Length: 119
Image 1 (tube, rainbow, N blue to C red):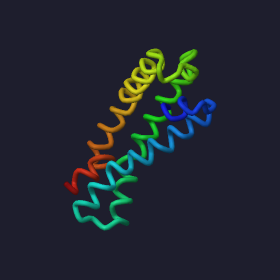
Image 2: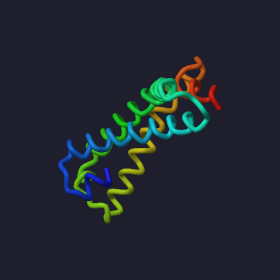
Image 3: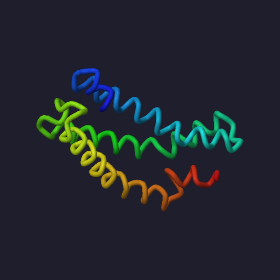
């Protein structure tokens, strides 16, 4: 959101960039430690995909929906506290939405439980 807003990109382009970067960094935060722990790259990719895809998807749908739904949030600049407040609120709502799904996945040995087994 910050990059798209700073660059003056349109709403859809900003959302697309936000989603792409969320998946890139979300997977990287799982993938890199697994590699450093000695896991083969192919296996680490599988674990990262299994651990993070559903969570990131829910977070991005909710986060971006909130940002788009709040009038003026996407038009506020990064120097505007309204932008940061809305972004923080959107992330909090997205966390609340993703949390029960993550708990459910972990209780069944899926999601992040697949990653924790390798620590």
